[in-house]
Length: 385
Image (cartoon, rainbow, N blue to C red):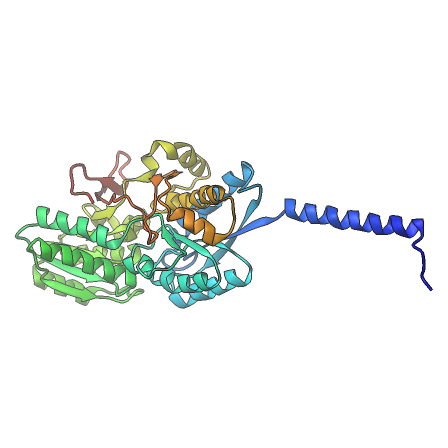
């Protein structure tokens, strides 16, 4: 026997349907874009992890305050890789499990490269603000991008400067055996050799080493007029301090891995005269002025890769809006299309590999500013990329 639906029951069904529809719209209205920022939040490179974290957090806050991306707000998860490849892969797998689709990070090239494989397999787009090793973008992955340059570009600038400023002098090369440090040292060495100069010493140390007395003795015996350092600020600073303690006055030259004032804190007064390659200081760009003021109001100086991290989030937003989609692969296609993105570090466009198309490494020297603090200042007229 058929049962007729009573008016009351019909009303209940309609009411339930209306409620379900209402909840569906509410869910859509509150849908969130899951983004992660990953880097060494602890350990000897935590200063750089703080740059990536603060840059991404401020960008997310500013974008959310302006309505988000395509009407959806961003939620940001933090991943601490401690600068270790295996921990970076663990962070990547956790992000994947949590449904994160966009990554700003990592810092170390040796962490970014293995982590990017996890991100690719899980349909996640990655922009590193700081990993400069060429391999990161040379593997034909759809999902790998950076807002910084590459070490073959950086090494070319360093090598050209050495050939010009230290012609006929002795150059020792020391690196930390990492993907970044040794890779940068090799690119600089290659550029030196192209210019007709050969190093008098080539040595590697281990990350975490603190006693460089034997190494400094070798540097002294080599008669080096310049020590090229491929590595980060902690070991680089200790090397400088111990060179000065043993009477070695030769300056050192490093890359972007020493671009934090902690380098001078570790190295001490002997840091003065240190040479360094890095991009034009983004804090001085007019488009960054308001953002820099926000950081300084929070007592955080946005050095090195802070604004590169901020720019990564800006690019994801602009590419998503151009694609009219939050699908990472569609966003990646827009990014590789040659489209220009306006960011706090200037206008950026990408080639098909995911590298920025502009070349802008310049030379710096660490010296005292007006307050007496030792920090990095661009050398006018030095070779540029």
